[in-house]
Length: 184
Image (tube, rainbow, N blue to C red; front, side):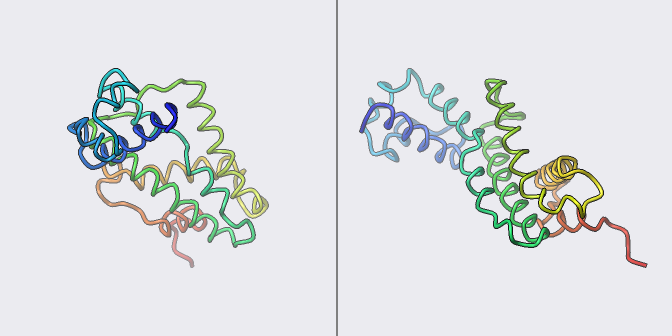
C-alpha cells in the first residue's frame, strides 16, 4: 500500500474505532483493525493523539453527504425530496453528535476556516438545489427555506437541544411545509 493510502486507511480505521471506544482506543486496536503492525502507525504519524486528531478532522469533512444529496431525484415531489434530504442530514448529524460525545468534544474542532466555510457553502448550495425547483410554491426564497430546514433539522436531531425529543424527518418536513396551525 502506498504511504498516502496507508495514512488514509489508518485515519478511516481510527475514526471507526473512535465511534466505538472514544479516545480510549489503543494503537494496538487500530493496528489490528487496519491489518498493520503497530509500529507502522508511527511511521505514518508521530503519536496516537495526532492520528486521533486527523480522524476527528475527517469526520467533519463533507464526505459522502455530497454524493447522497446529489442522488436525490429532482423529479420527486417536494415533500419526498425534503424527506430524503432531512433523513440524510439527520444521519450525518447523529453520527457526528455521537462521535463528539465519545471523544469529549463540546464543539467541532477548529478547522481551516476557509475550508470549513467552503464546505458550509457547498452544503447550502446542495440543499438549495433540492428546494429550488419548487421556489414559486414557497413563501420564502429557497435560501431562506434551506436555512430554516438546516436549523430545524440540526436542533431536532441534537439530543440536548431537543431535550431528548428528537424530531422525525416527517415532523420536520410537515412543520416546514405546513406549520403547526390546525386547518380550519
